[in-house]
Length: 118
Image (cartoon, rainbow, N blue to C red; front, top):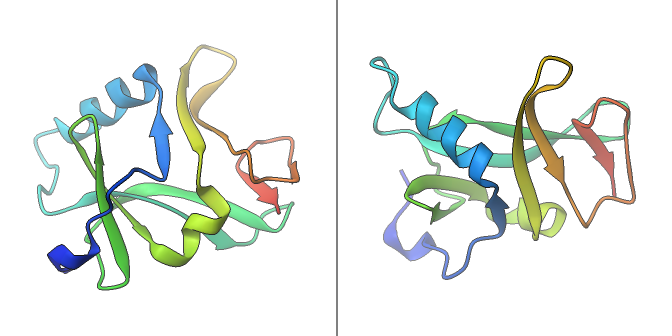
């Protein structure tokens, strides 16, 4: 688990009110593991080259730790170059349901909105 020396002074990403409400709903589930944090990151793949990672995970030593409106988060330090300034939103409509990513660092995104290029 990460040490206190990895605590960020500022948050690299932000969440809209809708995203915060949905994340809090997920964290309120009875089987939620309280040792996990919301992992925000990237991985190789997808139609545009990189895919967003958003899910609950136990922090690792290389992670930076931060909180957004009381939501405990973690991100690999090396991912900040791709995600700094990104806003995560939640769409709950019938035609579009799920988390969306508004990333100012992306030079292009795919039609599904879950992968991007820099």
